[in-house]
Length: 521
Image (cartoon, rainbow, N blue to C red; front, side, top):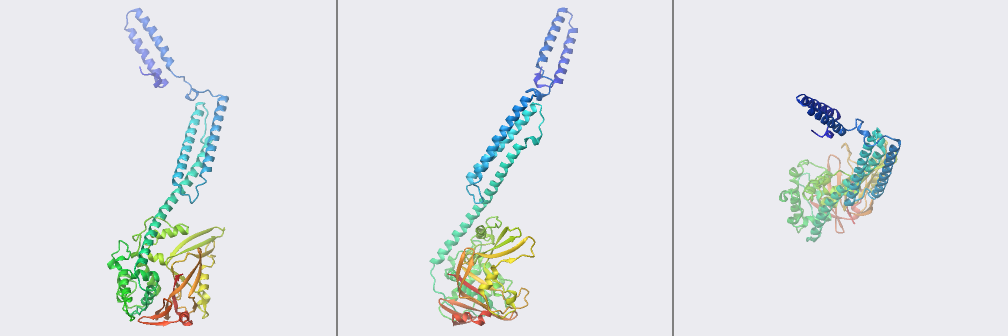
């Protein structure tokens, strides 16, 4: 017979009934009286013994403790004691984890905190289940809300866990971002060392032949050829120039520029033909049609973009899937790992980081960051229609001044500022109306030496080139004023003549100045 402790009460009784019937049937077949008596005695003892195995027919909850006020009071006190114990643990835990702020980077210690939090919460869940069973055994019905105090403690610890996890996750990404940015910095720094070690000769100037409405290119190349850093780079042997591994060096724009520049630097002062560069437009700049007059600004932007890809230290793609963060250092690292599709010496020499800060109606502030190689300064509406002289300083102050945002619900004002001044600052004086309707002839007083305010302090610059645009919007001509050593020259395609510093800032030049090239002192 199976152990009745493993059966339910009805099934056990039913089995005994069947057993008794079987015994009675066997007695009917027994002819001797003494056997019947023995069998009756055996049956009686068997029934008594079997019934002793049966559990009480009371409900299971009442089998361990009887419901009494004393028992319930004892259990309640035990429960309150456990709540106090876990409250102390929760408070002690949160006190310890206050050291974890947004800049926390001790990931090993943070993981210890997370394991501790998980252990406390597991104990809380186990304790909650234990007390539910104890109350059940006292036949006391408890609702889920009766254990809310323990749940609240667990939720506070869980909230702190999530806060730590968010910071660790963010800062791990920031650490990875910083590590990748440092790799880019290390590569760039080694390239700079190699450039400075390379033998170079003093800069010189000569004319560039016009190959059919290519004055806009000639003026830009005169300025770039005399940018100190680019000048030294182009003087290096071509095989030593650091290229992006995915770019075919011999088919690059830099190879063409290098060849033209070395022709430019040869002995002699006669004009050379930049034909190789002008004929490269279909391959590298299909937007610029051969024979068409184009905008010098658009050309220099396209030229920088192509050179940036060819010299990129991040293989022309982002090395991390990272979104822009509202932090200037983080954003700079983001650019260095390819946030602008590439990062190269061009970005290192010309890149400028800007901050746009919006003040909301409730007084809170929100900042976004941008990156550009050209600083575009616009004329005020009054200056556009005036012939009066405006200063470069006032145009820059207008660029960085706080402006109202009345047309933007919830926003009060916005302030734009430069986070970090670049090594070479290129300024565009926005002389062409956006709709292409007119050219602004307002004269601009630009200094030979200029100090600008940035969020990282004042930066002193020295003017070394000016690209000028004379004529009208439809039919203009580009020339350049270039500083070589202490001497200024005016380059007009093939023609080059020496001028004075006063000529550079003359009234006529103040009306024609379009791109200003400043070098950090």
